[in-house]
Image: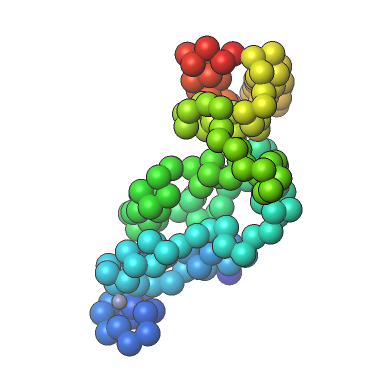
Length: 184
Ligand SMILES: [Zn+2]
């Protein structure tokens, strides 16, 4: 099914609501590209309770995490119409992070039986996550991973293909964050 703009006269999908459904909201994982159409109040309500990773097992999370390292992204983030952008901002607020992956990246590799606080701050943890590392990484392994990723993602290493540029920029930014935190 292809993502398509909501028809102008579509009714709100919330049961019993008689308003127009002018705002799209993604149905969720495994239903990428499919959307509900809600009125403003109901899209807000839906966004507040939306969790992309609902019902995902730990193994699926790890797999997803691995795929995210090579550029996997939920397809709905690619829609850049006003409604999709609104949804992203709403969900980012609700989660306290613009990156839904950052919330489990660091804890995914840890057994659930021994919870512990991350050694580093939120920014550093997020940067480590971007590099595919957790807070067990020392300066040496951070540098090694950084070099490896830059080599792999550099356009020169991909026959001039610039599609990996955004990812590369993210990696460089993450590394700079770690350097200013004296972690690399
Ligand atoms: Zn409604």
